[in-house]
Image (tube, rainbow, N blue to C red; front, side):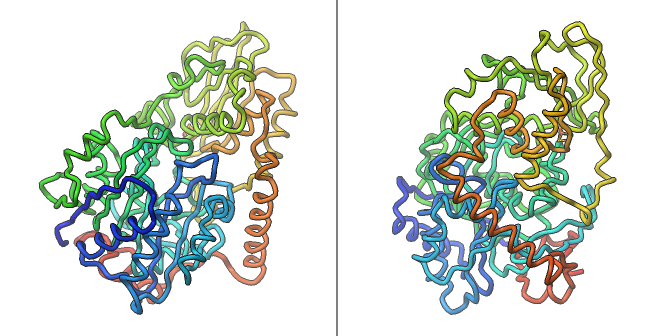
Length: 509
Ligand code: SF4
């Protein structure tokens, strides 16, 4: 493996010409020439006016695409952007709200992939410690010759940070993304590294995002960071914000599996901003990882959590339901500033909880997730909630399913109708997604439902119908799933994409 390099560049604003120059300089410094199927993966989990700091900004992508186009020239067969945005939301909507389509038109010749609408390709896994023997990824990812990872520099409430490696959660469609999206999320992100490694990484750290991932607090960092090795890159970003990369499980695992170095002595750091100067700029940057009990302090919501079913490995489900409720409430706060005032006292319980539940008669107590369990008294009444959690080994990637936002909406309506006279309501799923928890909170607080917000309803439904129509046509005329054949996968795959030497190489099998 060539010695990895990370470049730290100053970039005070979202000037497209400046960003293009910086990216062009980065490609030259790393001696990289885009070629073949060049695919750029942004982080556009949510976008637009309401989520201005959640995504790789449009100006940033424009600068990146322009620079790639010029650097690759005739060597590029296809220059594309591909993403699966937040679960249940059409990627078409995220692209529209971010003006990505208009931007792509300005650059010219850009293919836009919506990963939930493309063929899904099965990738076998062989490494020790894997969660599963295979998983699915969108075909454009599996076939990329030159992958460019363009994340947003953000904190993450479940995995501490979302830099380059964590951006891979968007290379699966919903049904596959939800599998293992629980206490094993970091392990899942580490496993996803076996699909492909990017040749080039450029992170939008101009306005970074603190604290959360969907609704982060803007943090003026004024940097563009580039690199050619995902582990070294993420390690460097951790160093900038004063986090030990070995404490971020997905980074540690990828390092231990040979994907790249973590120690600063093992890779080069260059650029017009020194690491010390970058650290200075990042002083005070707050990461996520706030337990649900703490998160809701001072509001009418009380959070309670017990351990998830992980054989004692974890005392909290960092990748699942508790983090999702934190994101859900933040979305509601954006749409309705009165959210906290309107919310009556409610109690939300996660995992195998054994403590007291301090609810009064008439206050709703929600048991969130398949693994929620409790035996004891609530408001003087005996309550027995039994876990319905199924061991992850029983879940098959071949039978994975997901529900779209309207079936989730109906499901939540039905559930609340069924339990309308009861104070104790179990909401099942593993995980219970951000969307479902948001819909449940809407019911509990009689809040405005963001799905029906008149500003967005037309565009959202338009994108939704477009997505569903396309996937229905695919189902009628061809199988959206495909077992990737060795020749097909091996043919165009460059050496840089392969997992580290000495490790199993799924794409060569
Ligand atoms: S049900 Fe929720 S809290 Fe329990 S293991 Fe699954 S994701 Fe975690």
